[in-house]
Amino acid sequence: MNAHCLAELSGVSKRFDKVVALDGLELQVRPAELLAVLGPNGAGKSTAISLMLGLQRPDTGTACLFGQSPLNIASRRQIGVMMQEVTLAPELRVREQIDLVASYYPDPLPADDAMRLTRTSSLAGRPYGKLSNGQKRQVQFAMAVVGRPKLLFLDEPTVGLDLPAREMMWAMLRELVREGASIVLTTHYLEEAEALADRVVVLAKGRAIAAGTVNELRALVGRKRISCATSLAPELVAAWPGVQTVSHDRGRLQITASDAEIVVKRLVAADENFHELEVHSAGLAEAFTELTQGPNQELTQEVAS
Amino acid sequence: MSATTFAIENNLPRSNEMTGAKLWRAYLTETKYECLRALRAPAFAIPFLLLPITLYVLFGVLLAGSMSHGDANVAKIMFVNWSVFGIMGPGMFGFGMFVAMEREQGLLTLKRALPAPPAAYLLSKMIMAALFAAIVMGTLVAAAALIGHPGLSFGQYLGVALLNMLGSLPFCAIGLFIGTRASAKSAPAFANLAYLPFMHLGGLFYPLPRSVQPLEFASPAFYLDKLALRLVGAPSLDQLAGVMGASSHGTPITQIAVLAAVTMIFALLAIRRLARVG
Image 1 (tube, rainbow over the protein chains, first blue to last red):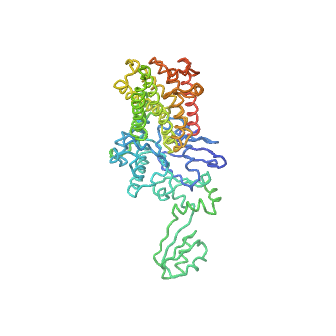
Image 2: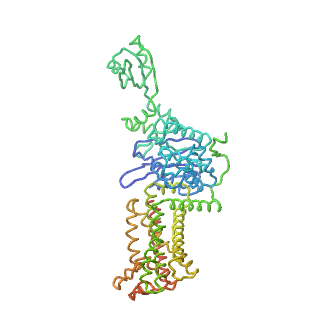
Image 3: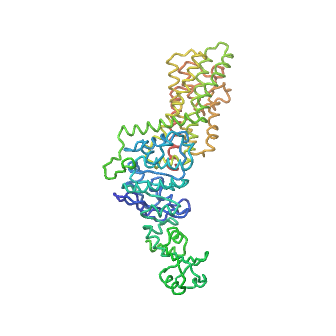
């Protein structure tokens, strides 16, 4: 076991009856980074996190939290947790919920400070059960940071938040990482990972099929989107080498291509009136789709490993 | 900018050990909020705090009083028996309902992931059940002194109250066992399935015929009741009614041993399951 690890899974496999949840997974959280763990439903994200938290034990391989077993309470005193499915006692007031969690830590923030930082002070005296879903998530976030953790596990933290609340949480996450905390984030919102993550790990069928920065993952897919106004027929462009898909929309062509430069040169040559050219890299969403569903899954696995 | 910083301050040396005072505070905080939330939950607090006193006054004082034919033992038996009834509910349902609910709703999982002191969860609930037992005993003692007149000394009142607070432990353990196995929806039903027979077979409300008396041995309430009756120097309902059967025997040592064994067996089974399955 790595004595300096923050949180690490090495060669971890986990089965539930006949279902393989994790299959030799390697996962490492580095200091002061936001690591986004992405993957389709059933990819093993939740299992991976619950192994790092010591909620379950791996069948093979090891889980490590702050250089020790996650079952060790001293290592858990350095983490904060926000879970996806949890109902807190509805009778307790918001300040009481936060105060209770604070009491578990050796050196916590005062509950009032945690509420001020997470913009939940106005809810302090309200019974938890009377809050809206979004407010509950904000309170759970306050509970996750009140212990001044070095490592935060956030499972779908922004589900149910309205836009301002979500942007506020994003800003707080960036601030936490800036201050030196590490964050493990699972999310279904790819734009969230795109906006926040220093590193992304994509899981599928219990394995890490790709890992890297957002830009590296986009590059892994290597597609570009070309958009322009032209009189050329879509069928004609679709037959060019390097063009993958073409669609036509109000006088504009939307082209995806593996080699954008060649296609653009040919567009210039074929249509003198061609204008309003835009070329974009593929987004994380496209990368994710291609990685987890595309025909190249075997290939990308090799790239990743 | 200190107002907007989370002050994680990773570079500062920080201890991850909880010193005695901090650990003590964690247990105390958990207990405080467990008691608060139980007192604020109307579906739990109202029946278990009001039912014992209401039923004691109605049946134990008014009804039994008019049928006692001047037997001083009846008032003592009624006070003791209704007090045993009163402390059963908070233990069985406090653990049965709340644990099943908190397991199902992910709260227990969250507490296991957080650095909550491992024993705090169960200990806080035990103290909550003891607090409810204390409140119930307070109301019953007040009613007894004012209108029940069982003729007990202060020491006897205190003895029955303390015995019952301790005596809620086996019911906590059985409730916990139910809570670790039943779903949130079925837990109250299963708790009732144990609670009602315990109550009736415990010989708390009426003497049992000799043929049924061996069943009394299956009810923890029977043993607790015997111990409490001994404290106040009163016979059991069976004995009073002259239905002397198997259950009229037994020493305090065996009664304490049975209650302790029930507590340990059910608590161990439940804790093992909590550790394995959650």
